[in-house]
Length: 380
Image (cartoon, rainbow, N blue to C red):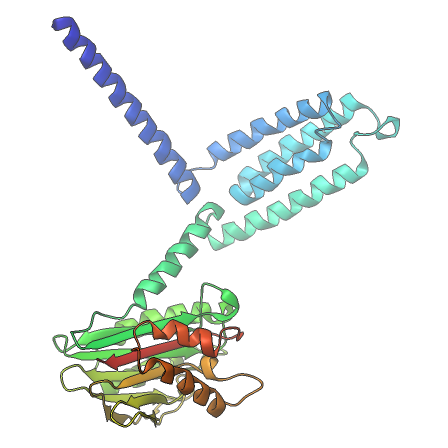
Protein backbone atom coordinates (compact mmCIF):
# COMPACT_ATOMS: atom_id res chain seq x y z
CA UNK A 1 0.00 0.00 0.00
CA UNK A 2 2.84 2.38 0.87
CA UNK A 3 4.59 1.67 -2.43
CA UNK A 4 1.34 2.19 -4.32
CA UNK A 5 0.71 5.47 -2.52
CA UNK A 6 4.25 6.71 -3.25
CA UNK A 7 3.88 5.69 -6.89
CA UNK A 8 0.55 7.54 -7.20
CA UNK A 9 2.01 10.56 -5.44
CA UNK A 10 4.95 10.58 -7.86
CA UNK A 11 2.59 10.24 -10.84
CA UNK A 12 0.46 13.09 -9.50
CA UNK A 13 3.50 15.35 -9.09
CA UNK A 14 4.71 14.49 -12.57
CA UNK A 15 1.34 15.25 -14.18
CA UNK A 16 1.02 18.49 -12.20
CA UNK A 17 4.50 19.60 -13.25
CA UNK A 18 3.80 18.71 -16.85
CA UNK A 19 0.55 20.67 -16.70
CA UNK A 20 2.32 23.73 -15.27
CA UNK A 21 5.02 23.53 -17.93
CA UNK A 22 2.40 23.29 -20.65
CA UNK A 23 0.58 26.33 -19.25
CA UNK A 24 3.84 28.28 -19.05
CA UNK A 25 4.71 27.52 -22.68
CA UNK A 26 1.19 28.40 -23.76
CA UNK A 27 1.24 31.68 -21.83
CA UNK A 28 4.61 32.67 -23.27
CA UNK A 29 3.38 31.93 -26.79
CA UNK A 30 0.19 33.94 -26.25
CA UNK A 31 2.16 36.84 -24.76
CA UNK A 32 4.53 36.80 -27.72
CA UNK A 33 1.85 36.92 -30.38
CA UNK A 34 -0.09 39.55 -28.42
CA UNK A 35 3.02 41.69 -28.36
CA UNK A 36 3.48 41.58 -24.56
CA UNK A 37 6.74 39.67 -24.61
CA UNK A 38 10.21 40.96 -25.40
CA UNK A 39 11.94 40.61 -28.77
CA UNK A 40 14.54 38.16 -27.47
CA UNK A 41 12.63 35.04 -28.41
CA UNK A 42 11.97 36.11 -32.00
CA UNK A 43 15.44 37.64 -32.31
CA UNK A 44 17.12 34.43 -31.11
CA UNK A 45 15.15 32.27 -33.54
CA UNK A 46 15.91 34.54 -36.51
CA UNK A 47 19.60 34.92 -35.66
CA UNK A 48 19.94 31.13 -35.42
CA UNK A 49 18.04 30.69 -38.67
CA UNK A 50 20.51 32.80 -40.63
CA UNK A 51 23.58 30.52 -40.18
CA UNK A 52 21.37 27.52 -40.86
CA UNK A 53 20.36 29.05 -44.19
CA UNK A 54 23.98 29.92 -44.94
CA UNK A 55 25.05 26.31 -44.37
CA UNK A 56 22.21 25.06 -46.56
CA UNK A 57 23.30 27.47 -49.29
CA UNK A 58 26.90 26.23 -49.14
CA UNK A 59 25.82 22.57 -49.27
CA UNK A 60 22.99 22.82 -51.82
CA UNK A 61 23.06 26.27 -53.45
CA UNK A 62 20.66 25.19 -56.18
CA UNK A 63 17.87 24.39 -53.69
CA UNK A 64 18.74 27.08 -51.15
CA UNK A 65 20.04 30.13 -53.04
CA UNK A 66 21.79 33.01 -51.28
CA UNK A 67 18.67 35.15 -51.70
CA UNK A 68 16.92 32.88 -49.14
CA UNK A 69 18.28 35.29 -46.50
CA UNK A 70 15.39 37.62 -47.32
CA UNK A 71 13.08 35.29 -45.36
CA UNK A 72 14.47 36.02 -41.85
CA UNK A 73 14.97 39.66 -42.85
CA UNK A 74 11.32 39.99 -43.87
CA UNK A 75 10.12 38.16 -40.74
CA UNK A 76 12.28 40.44 -38.61
CA UNK A 77 10.77 43.51 -40.23
CA UNK A 78 7.31 42.30 -39.23
CA UNK A 79 8.13 41.05 -35.73
CA UNK A 80 11.05 42.96 -34.25
CA UNK A 81 11.80 46.46 -33.09
CA UNK A 82 14.22 48.53 -35.20
CA UNK A 83 17.06 48.15 -32.68
CA UNK A 84 16.73 44.35 -32.67
CA UNK A 85 16.31 44.29 -36.41
CA UNK A 86 19.80 45.72 -36.90
CA UNK A 87 21.29 42.58 -35.32
CA UNK A 88 19.44 40.45 -37.87
CA UNK A 89 20.80 42.63 -40.65
CA UNK A 90 24.35 42.33 -39.31
CA UNK A 91 24.05 38.54 -39.14
CA UNK A 92 22.67 38.46 -42.69
CA UNK A 93 25.54 40.59 -44.01
CA UNK A 94 28.08 38.27 -42.37
CA UNK A 95 26.29 35.27 -43.89
CA UNK A 96 26.40 36.81 -47.37
CA UNK A 97 30.13 37.49 -47.03
CA UNK A 98 30.77 33.93 -45.83
CA UNK A 99 28.70 32.44 -48.68
CA UNK A 100 30.53 34.54 -51.25
CA UNK A 101 33.91 33.46 -49.85
CA UNK A 102 33.03 29.76 -49.79
CA UNK A 103 31.16 29.55 -53.11
CA UNK A 104 33.68 31.66 -54.99
CA UNK A 105 33.20 34.41 -57.59
CA UNK A 106 29.76 34.49 -59.25
CA UNK A 107 31.35 34.31 -62.73
CA UNK A 108 32.49 30.74 -62.11
CA UNK A 109 29.04 29.18 -62.03
CA UNK A 110 25.38 29.42 -61.04
CA UNK A 111 24.00 29.77 -57.50
CA UNK A 112 26.71 32.21 -56.45
CA UNK A 113 26.33 35.48 -54.54
CA UNK A 114 25.71 37.88 -57.42
CA UNK A 115 25.30 41.67 -57.30
CA UNK A 116 21.61 41.07 -57.93
CA UNK A 117 21.42 38.91 -54.81
CA UNK A 118 22.95 41.68 -52.75
CA UNK A 119 20.53 44.24 -54.20
CA UNK A 120 17.49 42.04 -53.47
CA UNK A 121 18.55 41.37 -49.88
CA UNK A 122 19.33 45.08 -49.36
CA UNK A 123 15.98 46.19 -50.79
CA UNK A 124 14.04 43.78 -48.57
CA UNK A 125 16.09 44.91 -45.57
CA UNK A 126 15.25 48.56 -46.25
CA UNK A 127 11.57 47.71 -46.63
CA UNK A 128 11.62 45.77 -43.37
CA UNK A 129 13.32 48.66 -41.58
CA UNK A 130 10.68 51.10 -42.80
CA UNK A 131 7.90 48.78 -41.60
CA UNK A 132 9.59 48.36 -38.20
CA UNK A 133 10.05 52.12 -37.79
CA UNK A 134 6.41 52.73 -38.68
CA UNK A 135 5.27 50.21 -36.09
CA UNK A 136 7.58 51.76 -33.50
CA UNK A 137 6.13 55.20 -34.21
CA UNK A 138 2.56 53.94 -33.91
CA UNK A 139 3.46 52.08 -30.74
CA UNK A 140 1.54 48.92 -31.64
CA UNK A 141 3.45 45.67 -32.21
CA UNK A 142 2.61 43.95 -35.48
CA UNK A 143 1.67 40.80 -33.64
CA UNK A 144 -0.94 42.71 -31.67
CA UNK A 145 -2.19 45.01 -34.40
CA UNK A 146 -4.61 42.47 -35.88
CA UNK A 147 -5.84 41.57 -32.38
CA UNK A 148 -6.54 45.21 -31.64
CA UNK A 149 -8.43 45.70 -34.90
CA UNK A 150 -10.48 42.57 -34.29
CA UNK A 151 -11.27 43.69 -30.74
CA UNK A 152 -12.15 47.15 -32.04
CA UNK A 153 -14.56 45.74 -34.59
CA UNK A 154 -16.27 43.56 -31.99
CA UNK A 155 -16.64 46.49 -29.59
CA UNK A 156 -18.28 48.52 -32.34
CA UNK A 157 -20.73 45.69 -32.97
CA UNK A 158 -21.55 45.37 -29.27
CA UNK A 159 -22.05 49.11 -28.96
CA UNK A 160 -24.43 49.05 -31.94
CA UNK A 161 -26.67 46.38 -30.45
CA UNK A 162 -30.19 47.50 -29.72
CA UNK A 163 -31.50 47.05 -26.16
CA UNK A 164 -34.05 44.36 -25.43
CA UNK A 165 -37.58 45.66 -25.91
CA UNK A 166 -40.74 44.67 -24.02
CA UNK A 167 -43.28 42.26 -25.43
CA UNK A 168 -45.14 43.67 -28.40
CA UNK A 169 -42.17 45.57 -29.80
CA UNK A 170 -39.44 44.59 -32.23
CA UNK A 171 -36.40 46.51 -33.40
CA UNK A 172 -33.44 45.47 -35.53
CA UNK A 173 -30.55 47.13 -37.29
CA UNK A 174 -28.43 46.12 -40.27
CA UNK A 175 -25.17 47.77 -41.26
CA UNK A 176 -23.21 47.13 -44.43
CA UNK A 177 -19.93 49.03 -44.94
CA UNK A 178 -18.71 50.14 -48.35
CA UNK A 179 -16.60 47.67 -50.30
CA UNK A 180 -17.27 44.78 -47.90
CA UNK A 181 -14.98 46.26 -45.24
CA UNK A 182 -15.34 45.73 -41.49
CA UNK A 183 -15.55 49.41 -40.55
CA UNK A 184 -18.19 51.89 -41.58
CA UNK A 185 -18.98 55.59 -41.47
CA UNK A 186 -22.54 54.75 -40.38
CA UNK A 187 -23.37 53.69 -36.85
CA UNK A 188 -26.25 53.29 -34.42
CA UNK A 189 -26.31 53.84 -30.67
CA UNK A 190 -29.39 53.11 -28.58
CA UNK A 191 -30.50 52.87 -24.97
CA UNK A 192 -33.61 52.70 -22.80
CA UNK A 193 -34.21 55.51 -20.33
CA UNK A 194 -36.83 56.55 -17.75
CA UNK A 195 -36.86 53.11 -16.11
CA UNK A 196 -36.98 51.42 -19.48
CA UNK A 197 -40.08 53.18 -20.75
CA UNK A 198 -38.33 55.34 -23.37
CA UNK A 199 -36.25 53.98 -26.26
CA UNK A 200 -33.70 56.42 -27.61
CA UNK A 201 -31.85 55.49 -30.80
CA UNK A 202 -29.51 57.58 -32.92
CA UNK A 203 -28.60 56.70 -36.50
CA UNK A 204 -25.61 58.70 -37.77
CA UNK A 205 -23.89 59.00 -41.14
CA UNK A 206 -20.37 60.46 -40.90
CA UNK A 207 -18.98 62.27 -43.95
CA UNK A 208 -16.88 59.96 -46.08
CA UNK A 209 -17.25 56.20 -46.34
CA UNK A 210 -15.58 52.96 -45.37
CA UNK A 211 -12.13 53.15 -43.82
CA UNK A 212 -11.85 56.88 -44.60
CA UNK A 213 -14.66 57.62 -42.15
CA UNK A 214 -14.06 54.72 -39.76
CA UNK A 215 -11.83 56.55 -37.27
CA UNK A 216 -14.21 59.50 -37.00
CA UNK A 217 -17.18 57.16 -36.82
CA UNK A 218 -15.57 55.25 -33.95
CA UNK A 219 -14.84 58.43 -32.02
CA UNK A 220 -18.34 59.79 -32.55
CA UNK A 221 -20.06 56.52 -31.67
CA UNK A 222 -18.29 56.48 -28.31
CA UNK A 223 -19.10 60.13 -27.65
CA UNK A 224 -22.73 59.80 -28.75
CA UNK A 225 -23.14 56.64 -26.67
CA UNK A 226 -22.01 58.62 -23.61
CA UNK A 227 -24.35 61.53 -24.35
CA UNK A 228 -27.40 59.44 -25.17
CA UNK A 229 -29.58 58.98 -22.12
CA UNK A 230 -27.46 61.39 -20.07
CA UNK A 231 -29.16 64.48 -21.51
CA UNK A 232 -32.79 65.41 -22.13
CA UNK A 233 -33.81 64.24 -25.62
CA UNK A 234 -34.02 67.76 -27.08
CA UNK A 235 -30.50 68.55 -25.85
CA UNK A 236 -28.77 65.59 -27.46
CA UNK A 237 -28.27 66.91 -31.01
CA UNK A 238 -27.22 70.31 -29.65
CA UNK A 239 -24.52 68.66 -27.52
CA UNK A 240 -23.47 66.41 -30.42
CA UNK A 241 -23.16 69.44 -32.69
CA UNK A 242 -20.95 71.20 -30.14
CA UNK A 243 -18.77 68.13 -29.82
CA UNK A 244 -18.15 67.97 -33.57
CA UNK A 245 -17.34 71.67 -33.74
CA UNK A 246 -14.70 71.28 -31.03
CA UNK A 247 -12.89 68.60 -33.06
CA UNK A 248 -11.93 71.05 -35.84
CA UNK A 249 -11.90 68.31 -38.48
CA UNK A 250 -11.36 69.32 -42.09
CA UNK A 251 -14.21 67.01 -43.11
CA UNK A 252 -16.06 66.98 -39.84
CA UNK A 253 -19.76 67.10 -40.58
CA UNK A 254 -22.29 64.33 -40.06
CA UNK A 255 -26.02 63.74 -40.44
CA UNK A 256 -28.00 62.17 -37.64
CA UNK A 257 -31.56 61.25 -36.75
CA UNK A 258 -32.63 60.83 -33.12
CA UNK A 259 -35.65 58.65 -32.28
CA UNK A 260 -37.37 59.09 -28.91
CA UNK A 261 -40.07 56.39 -28.53
CA UNK A 262 -42.47 55.83 -25.63
CA UNK A 263 -42.79 52.05 -25.41
CA UNK A 264 -46.05 52.24 -23.45
CA UNK A 265 -48.08 54.63 -25.56
CA UNK A 266 -46.27 54.26 -28.89
CA UNK A 267 -45.82 58.01 -29.22
CA UNK A 268 -42.50 59.06 -30.69
CA UNK A 269 -40.55 62.09 -31.84
CA UNK A 270 -37.90 62.29 -34.55
CA UNK A 271 -35.22 64.96 -34.36
CA UNK A 272 -32.99 65.33 -37.38
CA UNK A 273 -29.64 66.94 -38.14
CA UNK A 274 -29.65 67.13 -41.93
CA UNK A 275 -30.67 63.48 -42.16
CA UNK A 276 -33.06 61.80 -44.55
CA UNK A 277 -36.70 61.54 -43.42
CA UNK A 278 -37.96 58.34 -41.89
CA UNK A 279 -40.93 56.46 -43.31
CA UNK A 280 -43.79 54.99 -41.29
CA UNK A 281 -46.21 52.29 -42.33
CA UNK A 282 -49.75 52.83 -41.04
CA UNK A 283 -51.13 49.31 -40.70
CA UNK A 284 -54.72 50.54 -40.67
CA UNK A 285 -54.51 52.06 -44.15
CA UNK A 286 -51.49 50.23 -45.56
CA UNK A 287 -49.93 53.54 -46.61
CA UNK A 288 -46.41 54.83 -46.00
CA UNK A 289 -45.84 58.34 -44.64
CA UNK A 290 -42.62 60.36 -44.66
CA UNK A 291 -41.55 61.77 -41.31
CA UNK A 292 -39.22 64.68 -42.01
CA UNK A 293 -37.78 66.73 -39.15
CA UNK A 294 -35.83 69.95 -39.62
CA UNK A 295 -32.27 70.67 -38.58
CA UNK A 296 -28.84 71.50 -40.05
CA UNK A 297 -25.89 69.16 -40.40
CA UNK A 298 -23.86 68.40 -37.30
CA UNK A 299 -20.52 70.18 -37.09
CA UNK A 300 -21.31 73.06 -39.47
CA UNK A 301 -22.06 76.03 -37.21
CA UNK A 302 -22.73 76.79 -33.56
CA UNK A 303 -26.14 77.64 -32.19
CA UNK A 304 -27.99 75.23 -34.49
CA UNK A 305 -31.60 74.45 -33.63
CA UNK A 306 -33.29 71.13 -34.22
CA UNK A 307 -37.07 70.83 -34.53
CA UNK A 308 -38.68 67.43 -34.25
CA UNK A 309 -41.69 65.78 -35.83
CA UNK A 310 -44.06 63.62 -33.79
CA UNK A 311 -46.02 60.49 -34.54
CA UNK A 312 -47.51 57.36 -33.03
CA UNK A 313 -46.80 53.70 -33.67
CA UNK A 314 -49.95 51.65 -33.28
CA UNK A 315 -50.36 47.89 -33.56
CA UNK A 316 -48.84 46.69 -36.83
CA UNK A 317 -47.13 50.00 -37.62
CA UNK A 318 -43.50 50.09 -38.78
CA UNK A 319 -40.89 52.85 -38.76
CA UNK A 320 -37.84 52.76 -41.04
CA UNK A 321 -34.76 54.95 -40.51
CA UNK A 322 -31.87 54.71 -42.96
CA UNK A 323 -28.79 56.43 -44.36
CA UNK A 324 -28.40 57.86 -47.85
CA UNK A 325 -26.25 54.95 -49.05
CA UNK A 326 -29.39 52.79 -49.02
CA UNK A 327 -31.49 54.99 -51.30
CA UNK A 328 -29.01 57.18 -53.21
CA UNK A 329 -27.04 56.15 -56.29
CA UNK A 330 -25.32 57.98 -59.17
CA UNK A 331 -27.98 56.87 -61.65
CA UNK A 332 -31.04 57.78 -59.55
CA UNK A 333 -32.21 60.43 -57.10
CA UNK A 334 -33.13 59.89 -53.46
CA UNK A 335 -36.88 60.01 -54.14
CA UNK A 336 -36.65 57.09 -56.56
CA UNK A 337 -34.49 55.18 -54.09
CA UNK A 338 -36.99 55.72 -51.27
CA UNK A 339 -39.82 54.52 -53.50
CA UNK A 340 -37.85 51.38 -54.25
CA UNK A 341 -37.19 50.81 -50.54
CA UNK A 342 -40.88 51.21 -49.71
CA UNK A 343 -41.84 48.86 -52.53
CA UNK A 344 -39.52 46.18 -51.17
CA UNK A 345 -40.73 46.79 -47.61
CA UNK A 346 -44.34 46.20 -48.70
CA UNK A 347 -43.43 42.55 -49.29
CA UNK A 348 -42.88 42.08 -45.54
CA UNK A 349 -46.26 43.44 -44.50
CA UNK A 350 -47.95 40.05 -44.73
CA UNK A 351 -45.14 37.98 -43.18
CA UNK A 352 -43.85 40.47 -40.61
CA UNK A 353 -40.67 42.54 -40.38
CA UNK A 354 -38.63 40.19 -38.19
CA UNK A 355 -35.32 39.68 -40.00
CA UNK A 356 -36.20 42.25 -42.65
CA UNK A 357 -33.40 44.80 -42.16
CA UNK A 358 -30.61 42.80 -43.74
CA UNK A 359 -32.83 41.44 -46.51
CA UNK A 360 -34.00 44.95 -47.40
CA UNK A 361 -30.41 46.12 -47.80
CA UNK A 362 -29.68 43.07 -49.96
CA UNK A 363 -32.71 43.79 -52.15
CA UNK A 364 -32.34 47.56 -52.47
CA UNK A 365 -28.61 48.33 -52.34
CA UNK A 366 -26.56 45.14 -52.37
CA UNK A 367 -23.70 46.28 -54.60
CA UNK A 368 -23.65 50.01 -53.84
CA UNK A 369 -20.15 51.28 -53.02
CA UNK A 370 -21.29 53.26 -50.01
CA UNK A 371 -22.03 52.64 -46.34
CA UNK A 372 -25.60 51.50 -45.76
CA UNK A 373 -27.51 51.32 -42.50
CA UNK A 374 -31.16 50.56 -41.76
CA UNK A 375 -33.06 50.67 -38.47
CA UNK A 376 -36.46 48.95 -38.29
CA UNK A 377 -38.84 49.52 -35.37
CA UNK A 378 -42.25 47.85 -35.41
CA UNK A 379 -45.11 47.28 -33.02
CA UNK A 380 -46.47 43.76 -33.26
